[in-house]
Image (cartoon, rainbow, N blue to C red):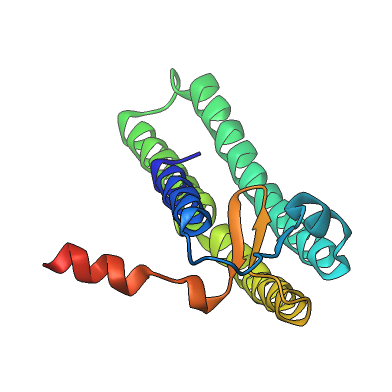
Length: 174
């Protein structure tokens, strides 16, 4: 768990303690809990998105493996023949090998690197689903008059009435 989440959970827990300890706090707070792992496992659209991503990923991975095998085969051939090659041919082959290696590295980085196509594709597939999940959580929370809904990572929903962010920002800016 990262520091930001830990700090957020501690602040939230502190806020709940303060709310419950106030003398004038007579309203009963209604809490709920969701199992995020179960939602991800049983939400059919999530499974379809994962399958779609896995298909795309496998195609990219297969292409990278083909490029790697091609490079390795050409390297082996060069190593077998380099003793009989002229200096000019050696330089040509070495340049061709360097170009293949650079192309493989560029492809790998473009697809699998930070903010690469794989990451972008995964985000494009899951972002709309996360929005649907959050909307469903909010709908269930408002319909069931829940004040707070938690998941395994922390807070999933809170009534806006309990949001003290602006007050905290005001204090910080003083």
